[in-house]
Length: 434
Image (cartoon, rainbow, N blue to C red):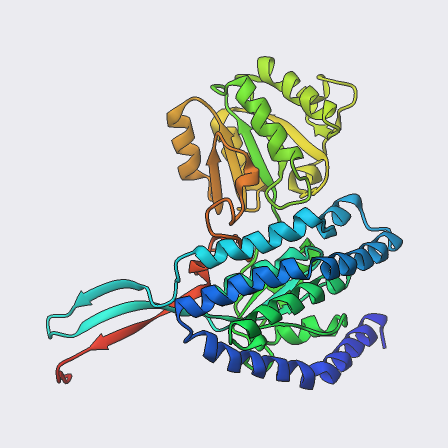
């Protein structure tokens, strides 16, 4: 028997052992969803505000739990970018609570009449927004996902089953405990937001199978290997993006000072988020004036630069880019730089190497901007703005449960509206079909 087969069999055995507990978790979530799905806007708003208060009240417990996670992550030799994603501070806990409050103020998406039409036979048909049901969220190092996902799902009338990574497990448990206290205070079932109470990776495999029909949709939040596994193995619908290979194209009509500001912020504000720029494309029409200043700006900011032949001539610190660099989501202070043949060259490069996540053009040419916005097939396309705005909070969604790059149902930041489905309500006056 090969090692791979032994490992696969062991994982299957672990999953079978966990199944009774996980299925019970799913059944409790399904029962809770029936309650929150019918809760009115005032009840859900009260619960979210109570959660925010509970998170603030539990700040010391959350930070202590996070410190435990950080010690373990450092002992395992995790990267600086990973530690940054995992770290919570007092300001970070306040930001989590504030995001929950922001979600509370959003209009209730459930019950919205999306369309109304009357048939020739007198039937009045309405398309009405409804909750999706039970949403499974599998995430790794970002503890704030616990609150963001739980709060967004609740606002849209859904129940949530969260599976935190082993690195953020203690932090997630502390945040979830505070959210459960808020649900209880508002008279809603705390099973509406649950956390899988084990670090065992077999729990992921069980969730991918749907927990015997109790999970309706999965959302993976994490690295490429996690998201790829979920997309490849899930037996239920998935909202996800595999990678954020984010491009900035500096067009020949770009203002250099604006380009400097946007490029530096897009790459270096936070290098470990999916909206961070990974590839900088410079129009050959402005390379003589824009390439060197932008590359030197990034180098001076502590960003490693991997460049094509023309970029290598700018500074001896630039190292040669390989084909793999154009396909890499670094999530670190590294950027790939290439000179391209105008707008056509930029679009061709993005289509060849991009991940359909977020891409930006910097230009003063309105026609070039409109063509880029229309032709680049990414979930988020920007003109003269930092790619770090690729975030549900910045879109006014309160927060996001993830960025979806697929083309079914949801695309871009997944907020409360994307966490609803719809049904048809048909009102008649005795009509029968001939």
